[in-house]
Length: 170
Ligand SMILES: C[S@@+](CC[C@H](N)C(=O)[O-])C[C@H]1O[C@@H](n2cnc3c(N)ncnc32)[C@H](O)[C@@H]1O
Image (cartoon, rainbow, N blue to C red; front, side, top):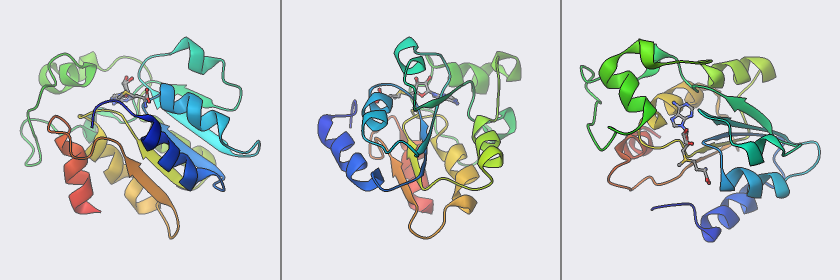
């Protein structure tokens, strides 16, 4: 729960050392730590809604800025899986409650990466927060194959119930 702690990252890194292709959702400290612990030929994508200057400088990170999903992927108040938690201050909340016009910038980055690479990742690390977790899992699930790894951060956090729902559909 809470921010990623050293032990979370160490555990994640212990699983991804031999992996060749990683997608991370939600950039930050984790991106820096992962980038330091992968091999030179590992393809590492990190998706984030906003640019973070320090991440931009990491040479071995393919940094994608924008929405990982498209509008149609959002779980809206009319959907059966909708959970109203504390989304009000998040950009995702604006899109869900106010509409598609709040979705500025590039969209659907996760599908674009899969198309670019022609397959799903060896490691999928989800740390986007409460809104997108279930939609992104629905997108990536058909592409995850035997021995690939999915890691959701904060799966039991009360504000991040979509992670919990993702866990239930695993
Ligand atoms: C919890 S933070 C990531 C923390 C990071 N992993 C770390 O270790 O510092 C979540 C990030 O996900 C991004 N995010 C949330 N929803 C998103 C979406 N629909 N598309 C792209 N990025 C999104 C936010 O911009 C935010 O920066």
